Length: 81
Image 1 (cartoon, helix red, strand yellow):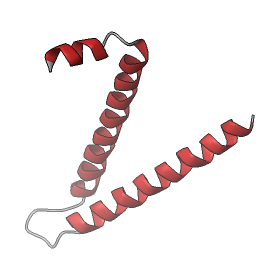
Image 2: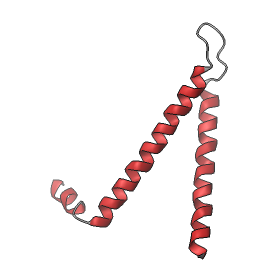
Image 3: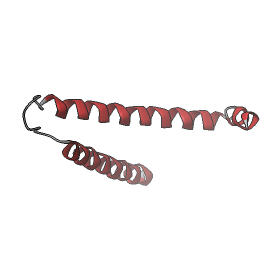
Image 4: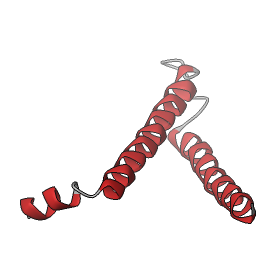
């Protein structure tokens, strides 16, 4: 198994693909963390939460869906040129 992995990393295109995927995954996780911290900032301990986990998840889901739609739209525009 280790030999197969080392062979895969010898391919330049595979390394580029892994790097791009890692950067996108890191950006998504960073965005989710910032989103969670931003909404939890308004929750005061001892009081009813302003934003619960369902609301934060809904905002994150809507953002992810529109992000995918925007990437598809950009791909269509770039494909036509």
